Length: 475
Image 1 (spheres, one colour):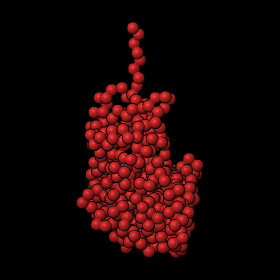
Image 2 (tube, helix red, strand yellow; image 1 turned 45 degrees about the vertical axis):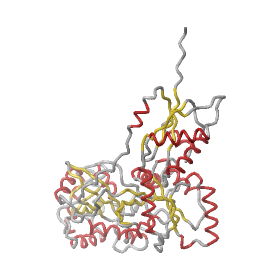
Image 3 (cartoon, one colour; image 1 turned 120 degrees about the vertical axis):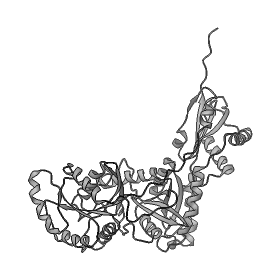
Image 4 (tube, one colour; image 1 turned 180 degrees about the vertical axis):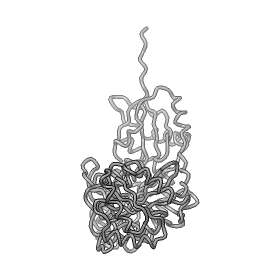
């Protein structure tokens, strides 16, 4: 844990009555599970403006948009709201009937979205018209028995309306002229979408309680998408030897060890968000947002390679976000005895600040120990949700400080008056003192705190509030 993360609630206090304020703080409860929503799939060939249209339907910038064709590669779900009705919009990769390699996997994702959606929007570039690809897509859609809306995109003004009529030849009904870039016709399209969508989805997935949210993060090509596919038992995320295949976070409901979890596969992080550019910049923002929206993160590390600066950066991002943490060392089928000894040395040297994190050695390729992830996730989340009573906390602290008093600073030794756990998620301990506590002593307190109370798998924040000195009045 970095020293900066220890200072989140530092400040001053002047009255012990503030103790009561923190003592009343209680852990937040789980959110109520969301109601099932109908699903709208947005499909079409590459670079017809699907992601731009999705952002227009959502009313916010969510899907990654760039002039380069093929930026969207997985099917990605977003929550949408129009006229008081909520539904899910699924953005897909470009559909090519004769695709090979990576594009073939992308096309498979688009086809799966079509089969699982309640209604479908087929996006066509009005300036190009119906190509052989659109005609092939139309043949598939006519067999899907789902409501289909043909959108003639990039109709930015009245001059482009004449080009729309040729799309009647697809045999999918009246095409709608829309400009995803400027918003022309988007309101009428949303009204038609609501007419096509059922009140409830045809297929409902869920659990008796709200699934715990798990972010799957790591550097590029470490095996995140392969692990997600192994967990789901299907090709949920596009997997390819090309690093950086995943751009958007991908949500999946996964049943693991008798419990349903909501997994989010994220883009591999190469650079810091501030130094990334283009698609990588937006992917970094999505990954950061996915971590912050999750409750626990599985950081996937390639066990067959030395721990890299990228691995440390991802771990630091999770810790600073205050999320529970599980470290999964992937590709264990490639790790021999020598590499295991070397890895243990690297962990002791590089990951000394996260010794509290849960660890599991897995292989996304063979499925080795994948089932062990669930107990580790539960342990980390239990710690993340745990609250220690003020009385118990202060009894422990008084004994510890008596044996190991804080070091003097500026000739004065600070005293710790009392402590309280201000919050959970992550557990945050606030110390009310007469002086500043050195960062080294805070780390010592955290280590002793963990030895006594556990908190395996969860970051713990130690914050200090120094008592203000009252000015002496003149006699």
